[in-house]
Length: 92
Image (cartoon, rainbow, N blue to C red; front, side, top):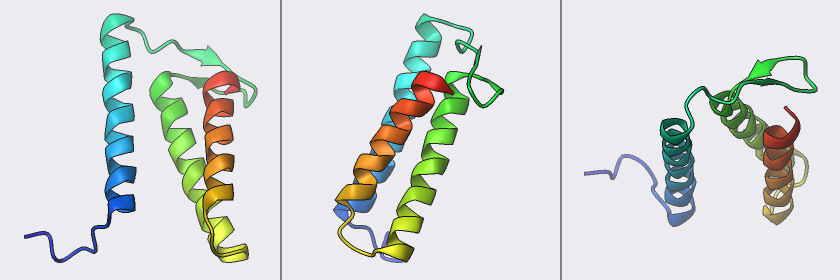
C-alpha cells in the first residue's frame, strides 16, 4: 500500500519524532494554555509552536547544507541540529 515511497526506519523515526514533538506541545498547551509567548534575541514574539517550527526549519537547512558540503556521515549535523533546537527553545 505504501510502496510508492521509499519508507526506511530513519525516515519513519523522523516523522515519529515530529509527531511526538507536536503531541508533547499539545499536552503542554492543554496544561498551560497561552503558548508562553516571549520576545527572543531575533526580536520576534514567538510561542512554543513557532519555536518548534524554527527548530524544524533550521534542522532541515543544517542537514541539507551538510549533505551538500560534506556528504556522509550525518552524526555531526545531528549534533548541530540538537544544539540549534536547544538554542531556539532557550533564546528565540
